[in-house]
Structures are given as structure tokens and as C-alpha cells.
Length: 111
Length: 521
Image (tube, rainbow over all chains, first blue to last red; front, side, top):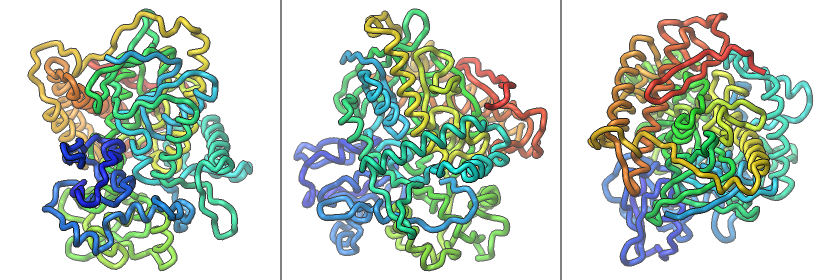
């Protein structure tokens, strides 16, 4: 679930508010998005992928977690890691250009 | 209340919806697309990635492609439909490549690999394309009901703009429902927008479902997480709690073993059959698969991790709104269905459409439905949007009794009947009957007492849609007293030659089923 909006990194572009498919965010009084409906979060990581300043962190668990430490996340390289991997952002190569998957044998691929 | 009018209204925001909108616009009509979430991130495709049923037009290759799932699907698919989906998908994927609309990777032989798409990139670019084609996109604007003309044909829809805080209506010549399947808010990746709303709205104007018994797909994910990427678990070995190998468990053909074991305790997994090359390729192909592991601090290739099975309902099942023509029309004039909202039995029969087939179906059926709806609207002429219309919505909007039902409570009740493996995955007639009784009672309660206003109307309608889908599902599962495709019954383990037919279903206060005896074409 979405666990962190970093007020230091956020530039109040409202992009996460716009792209969240389940409408989890509200605009805060100071312009920083507020996680208003966390239980509606479907852990799809799309807000993170679309954040231009890597200000968001989605934990993989589908239930709320204890608070995350922004500094530790940044140091571990997890902040913005999905956006980097799919190659979004200035100067990056779209990840789809490198998406040559493994051979999965003859069984029908069903997902 | 915002009032709009258009020739074609597309409901939904995933691949089927965007292809419908694009091809309707290219047919020269005015198009509005209304999505519950955000067109570009909504739905099962955008959040993940998908193989695509892209097969070169060589007779032997096409024949093999068509034959590959026929037996698995219980011989309920149709060769003619498979052929036209293969052809349309091939054209569409080539169009994406040739127009620079998607950056495909290059394979080891120097040729582009056009048999897969990364969801975020694909859907981001589809949004751009439809906007360039002049489609008006309404994001965060869940449709809550259809509008009908005096003759019963569909003439638009009403909804709620949840980020603006007001209602809206779109009068349209024709409507395409591309709202996705129904995964019962299981939190399987990207599916919480897929609550079967389109099927409810279709049923309220008299449309039919088909194949709703093929609705018990479950995807593998690490415990307590969302990323269901079952294909990669073909590299897995599954283990019991004590470290012993769970015999018979497999991603393909052994998932029920996992379900049974999960009823007793934990199941662990390790992707220890992937060699170095496969490991690297998996990361490049589907980076989101590794998000979960990287953030849990688990190396899935060397460490065991607990897994779960998440219900994917009709998203990876094949049931949905019954279509009655090559242009994906339904039994109701002016109403078209595409993607996972529609039945995919035409190409999958009763086997899962997950992955390549559903992706091919979404783009093909979307494209056909968009053109079909455009033609229908053009034939109606300019007077179409001046027709007198009535709202068709019932449950959750216009309660028949005292307003004492709660949407969250309804959702919990439905989930209690459709998510458990020992009810929906490992199906038995007695258990299904008991579950259906609870669901019927839930429907009666919500039909009488569920009422949402403002943004709560969306939750109320979702609760009603989940209940309706669950009832068609179990009623159809009970009608099929055999095992065929994914609709397996513990009490009828064999396939029965006399039941080689599809099953239509429908109705709301009274749910019905009917065998469709005409052989698939």
C-alpha cells in the first residue's frame, strides 16, 4: 500500500492525485497530497511510477505497515526504483525496449 | 449535473476501452470515454504486463495456436472467432510497432518481439493516442447506470465525477461497456477497479451473461502482497511448512494442490528452476514482479517465501456479457461489450483467458465494438441524442425498502462466499448451494436497503455489482453438473459429452441460467 509521501521531495504537481486508479489521495491544504483513503489502495505502484521526483513509496504489503523511514528508503535505492526500472524520466531508456523475457516452454502462458 | 452528448460513449479505461474509443473515432464519430479511475493506469493490464496472442499468419502456426487451448477449454471456443482475433491482433500489434506507438524490444535474432506488452508503457501511450484522435476523456468519472430510450435501446449513461464532486449524464447514440471483469476486490494486481459494474448495468437493461461458471481463476502471489504473475511460477518448486516438497503442486496443472495445502497451513515457494539467463530475463521482462521481493528483502531464486492464491474471478476467467455478433453487439440494441467485460469463450472456451488471449481479445473486441457502435450511432442520425431517456439503475441507487444496508457489509458478505478456496476453487454442489443462498439473501437485503448518494453511490453500485456477478457465477456453476474447463466440480469430476454447450445467465431479483445449444462457430 501507499505508505509515504515525502513533503521534501514533493513538488505539488498533483500527478499522483490524478493517476491513482482508486482515488486514494486528496490535495492537502499545503499542496502536498494526503493519503486520504489508504484502504482503497490496490498496491499497483502506479503513483510511484508516475511521480517525477520519487517522492512516493508503495510497500508491497496489501495492509498498512508501521511508518517507513524516508532516509533509509532513499539509501537502499528503493525510492523511485520502479520508475527507474520501467525507464520513465528524463534521459532514461524505456524498459519495454529491453523486455526480452525468459523462454517459458510449451505450456500456454496464462499470465 | 453536467450534461454531455456524443455519438459513442465508451465506459472503461483499459485496453479494450481505448481500442474501442480509438476505432470509433477513426470511423468518424464523436467519442466520450468515461473511466472509473484514470485512463492509462486503470485495470489489470496497466498495472502489469501481458503476453499477446501474436501469431504469424502461417497456416501451421495459426492452426497450432488455435488448437493449443481447445481441449483445456472443454471445446467451447470457436475456430472462426479464434481466426479473426488472431488476424485482428496481428494487424493491431503491427500497427503499434509500425506507427511507433509502442517501443518493442528486439529479440536475439534481430527481429522485434511483438508478443508482449508492458502495461504502464502500453496504456500510457494508448491514452495519448485516443486524445490525439479527439476522444474526450473523463477520468475519475465512474458510470453508475445506463440510460435507455423509449424502445429499450441503450442511449447513454449517468455517473459521478468523484474528483469534481458532481453527477453527470452522457446522451449517446451507442454505448460500449469495457469495464473489465470482476475480481471481487481481492487486491490481485490492478483488479480493484474491476468490480463487474458493466455486467450489472448490462443486466439492468436486459442483456445476458455467458460462461459465468468460468470465473474461479486464482493467481499466485507472495503472501500478503498484490503481484500475481503466475507465469513466472513455472520456475517454482513449492514446499510445505516443514521444508518438504509439496508433491503435485505447480503453477500450471497443480494449482489446486496449492489451494488444498493453503486450507491446512502455509505454502512456500522458491523459483529454483530458473537458471542465470532466465533470472535476468525475468527481471527485464516484468520488473514489477521483482518490486515485491526487492522490498521484502527476499531473493526469490534462493530463498523460500510464503505464497497465497488471490481470486481473479472473471478477469482471468472467461465469463462475461454475452455477445451476439461479430461487432460485439449484445442482445440489447445500442449496447456493445468488449474486453474482460464480455465473455471470452469465443477464443478460450472454459479455460483461463489470462495473459495472451485476454490481451488479444481486449484489442480485437474493443476495435470491433468501437466500429460497431460508431456504425449504429451513424445509422441513428443526428436525432439520437435528442431521444427521451430513462435511467435503468436499480440496486444501490433506488432502494425498494428502508435504507438500512451498508455497502461495506455487503462486500464483506460476498467476499466470504467467493474468495475462499473451499467454496469457489474446489467447488462442490452442496457448498455452492449454501453459498448461493447467502448471496441471494444478500441481494434481497441490498435491493431493499442499499442506497448511496454523492461519492458513496459508487461504493453502493460496486457492492451490488459484486453480488450480482457472484450469483450468476454460482448459479451457472450449479447448472454445469460436470467438470469442463476451469469449472470443475468435486461432485461431478468427469466431463459429460451431453453438456458440450455454453451456459447463458442473467436476471437480478431472479437469477436464471439457460443452455446455449447452438455449437460454437
